[in-house]
Structure formats: C-alpha cells, structure tokens
Length: 459
Ligand SMILES: C[S@@+](CC[C@H](N)C(=O)[O-])C[C@H]1O[C@@H](n2cnc3c(N)ncnc32)[C@H](O)[C@@H]1O
Ligand code: SF4
Image (cartoon, rainbow, N blue to C red; front, side, top):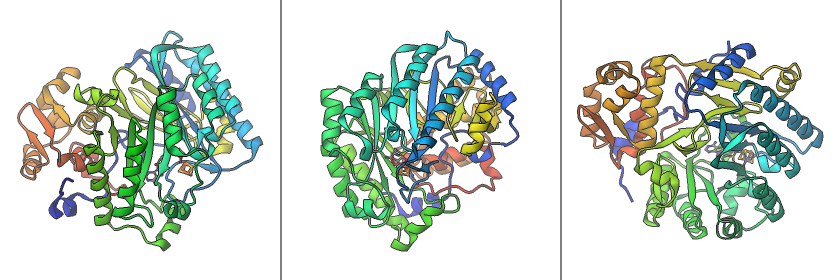
C-alpha cells in the first residue's frame, strides 16, 4: 500500500474541483437561450471530433439512496415516466434535425437516476429512433448505468438485443449494514452471477461502482468489500470518494447522525482498496477508476490517448462531442457546454413548444480550450507535453505557460514534494502525485486563483 505522508494529506486534502469539465459546472452561466443553443449545436457539425456521443439522462429511481449526489426523481408513477419518454423522443428529434446526418454515433450512454428502472420496451423504442436517424461507427460503445435491484436476465437480454455492450452496475458496498443505512435496495440477482453472465456468457464488459466514506464503513469492512469485488472479477471498477455536499443535497444531512468516517480513515480505505486492486492486476486509471491490463482504457492510458467527459473515461477512438438529452443533461461540445433544465415541468413545456430545454451553459474562448486540454491531459494521461500542446493549438510553449499561469516555482514545489517530475518540455505525474492530481490540475487553472466557489475535498 502506498504510504502518503501526513504532510501531503494536510496540505492537499482541501476542497478542489473534480474537473469532469473545464470550466467546472458551477461556472456555467444562466443567460444562454434555446435559440443560441440551437446555433451552437448546428455549428458543432464543423468542429472536431466528428463522432457523435449521446448522453440520455433518466432521472427516475424507486428509492432515494441517502448519499446520492445525482439528479434524481423518486417515483413509481407510470404516467410520469410515459410523459418523460415521450418528451425525450421529441427532444431527440429536435437535436437530430440540427446534426449532419453523415456524422456517426460512437457512443450512447444512458445515465441517471436509474435508466434500467424504465420499462425495457421504452429503451428499445428510443434505441430504434437512434438507428433510424444515424449510422454508427464499427464498434460503438452502448452503455447503461444500472441499479442491480432492477436487473433481471430477461431485461438484460433485451438490452443486449437492442445493442448494449457495456454495463456499469452500482454496488457501492457489499456490507448489508452499510446498504441498509443508506436506504439501498438489494440486488435482484447475486452480483457474481450477474457479472459472470454478462462477461463470460455474453462476452460483454462490466464496470462495478463502489463508494468509500459512508456510515459504518471502516478499513476492515471496505477491505472485505473490495476482496469480494476482486473475486467477482469485473473488467473495470470505480471506487469513488463519497462527496458530502449537504448544502446541495439535503438528504445527505441524515447520514451525519450515524457518523461519517474521518479523513484519515477514508484515505486509508482508498489506499487499501488501491493496494488490493493493483496487487490483483488492475491498473489505476485517473484517480478512482481501475481496469484490467488488457482493457482498452489501460491500453489508451499507455499510449497517452485517454480522454474523459462527464460520463467517465473513454478512448480517442470512441470519443465524440457529447449531445445530452433529458433533464439536467450536459452537452459537451468543442466550443461550449449546454445544460438542460433540471425542472421536469419546464423540460416538458420547452419541448412541447419545439425548443431545446437548455437553460445554462458556457461558451469557451481559445484560452479556455487550451486550459481544458492541459487539465484533461494531466487528469487522464498523467503527462503534459508543452511542445505537443503548443503544436495542437498552433502557438508556442511560452504562450501555453502564460495562459495556464503556471510557474516553474510552483512546479519545483510539486517536484520537491515528489508529486511530479518536470523539465522545459514536459510534466510527468508520479505515483504519489496521482493521488493529488486534482490539486496539481488546479494550479494550471487561472479561475482557481480567484475562486469563490465551493467544492468537495480532493480525496
Ligand atoms: C447514477 S448512479 C448509478 C446507477 C444506479 N442509479 C445505482 O445507483 O446503482 C451513478 C454512481 O454515482 C455514484 N455516486 C452517487 N452519489 C455519490 C456521491 N455523493 N459521492 C460519490 N459518488 C456518488 C455511485 O457510485 C453511483 O453508482
Ligand atoms: S444512487 Fe442511483 S439509485 Fe440511488 S438515488 Fe442515486 S441515482 Fe438513484
């Protein structure tokens, strides 16, 4: 297990952006109109990457997990779900009319909420609409985030028939006391059977999600959970630090009565999981993802071709500009971010009037695109070449350094602390530096020099 010093932890376990986008979503502006959003989507046809990546947000869940930081609606009301699916289809049609039909789909990601809480025929209908409107690249990634409480073999078979080839399943922990405390429903099929079925019988890829930092978790219990996960043998795992943001997610406050693990316990849980997973042959991808050595994410990391968006990591082959559908979805285009309204009523009303349901967003200037690229390279590939970045943006390394307002003094400080190695041409993140990658990235972000925003802690 890597031993992080008390010095590093005290200095760097501070609130820091997660950088799933640059600028982070709390910098988005709310003066973007649907008409502007339409123009931005239309213009994205002449931007790179050419591939289309769709994100569909399904907000519905059957029960509220108390830790949840996602955008959810707890309901079992079939009419509400029917109405939503109807609006989603209309939204797809509005967006598809703005996109060149010659562009191909490389990814479709269904997230939530709990997409597999939808009746499967609705998923099939929406997938057929995509197939009617667009062609696909040869091996597209069609993925769904699933809650195992609603996964049955017949449901899975129909998803596979509709083209799904990646399944990300929320486990969070195998300890029943932890799961009961956070109001998490039990799995319909034992997780080991589910993963065996998808990976061994259907030859598809499975990711399992875990969270550390919840009530009643400690180093010993989380060690058991990760040991069990290793036995289950998924191709990928995500081990997330519990983001406690009760000022945004009121239900999280309820967890405080049970006591939350302290910073030191939490970090030791992560380092223990990290040690177990890497000893078992998994490669760490970014801060919190792990993949088998022959997984394409690992291969992309080794060839410095890893990329990331709100939906997670991807390879350069499948990466596209992301077009989001559904409440709260965020489109990630080369020039801009566009976020849909989180308000269900407003979402339906805007689509009924034929408008895109976009209410927030951010248009990036050239300097911000450079900063985004630099942060992306550091966060994904743990490496930055000033020369390659300058060539990509047709400018000089000196200009890139000025735009990211990074200084040799700051880099020397990280180097003396063992977090990076650098010279005039490149910056390389070390094994220890990986754990503080968000802190390192933040020093390349001029916004952080004057930020008044709130973020969760780095680890
Ligand atoms: C949309 S959910 C996955 C699908 C399904 N709804 C489920 O819960 O199984 C996405 C993932 O986000 C993670 N997550 C949710 N709230 C979180 C929080 N507050 N901090 C860290 N991770 C969180 C969980 O690991 C969860 O599996
Ligand atoms: S963790 Fe998943 S199932 Fe639970 S409330 Fe959040 S999105 Fe819904």
